[in-house]
Image (cartoon, rainbow, N blue to C red):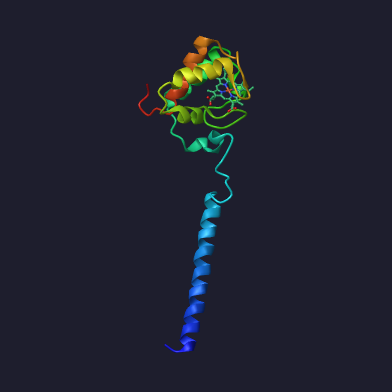
Length: 142
Ligand code: HEC
């Protein structure tokens, strides 16, 4: 191999290296891994509610329950969209695989949670609301 060939090969390799690292940089930046923006105080806000399966029966039941009990929930919540508080389907999905989910959500509704004040629903109502909320993302209904 003569000297010229070696120089061309060397330059070629450098250019290839730059292209590859540029590409990786782009991918990383787009995925959000690079600037740590995957770390969120409210991870449930990062979920797009419209992509979550919603059980239509449970959705109707929840809306009816809230209005027939004259509860103020819908001032801050919607079933399928984030408002002041997270969409109910997002809450449902967040707790879907947690065994003690009903009791946990019940106590959050009854006693308040973060920016949500407590006392908006009594213990019994909070239990029913927690149960229906969990049914929202249950494909099998109950
Ligand atoms: C004044 C506004 C407001 C009202 C009224 C309100 N919420 Fe909330 N709710 C919020 C906010 C804000 C959050 C998010 C709290 C956080 O993550 O810090 C929240 C969170 C929740 C959560 C999720 C708790 C968790 O464990 O992640 C549930 C369930 C919930 N609300 C149900 C209800 C129900 C049922 C009612 C009616 C009885 C209600 N909310 C009324 C503002 C409200």
